Length: 131
Image (cartoon, rainbow, N blue to C red; front, side, top):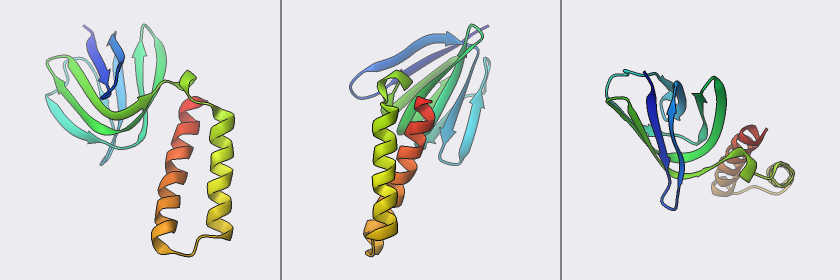
């Protein structure tokens, strides 16, 4: 028995496939879904969603949203998402260095530091998804 995964953003559908399992970044922690999972609705955090299809593990970067599981259908409504081959690792590393440099050398305003730390976390997740 398979689990149907539909991963959708406001602008496109990234995944529509029968899969063996899904692991997603929930706001309360990572969670896994297998076929015949109990009904579930949860908020997603920024992170890497992985799914296994025909024995092969796939990754998708998701940025927020919601996941619903009902009767062997998992619907992920992500605020934004990217496939690994859509992410430029060199550009992401460059951005990471810029943010780290600004944190180390220039940032003094607490609001700016908080924004930079959010950017740093997102870029680290983006890089993990690309590799």
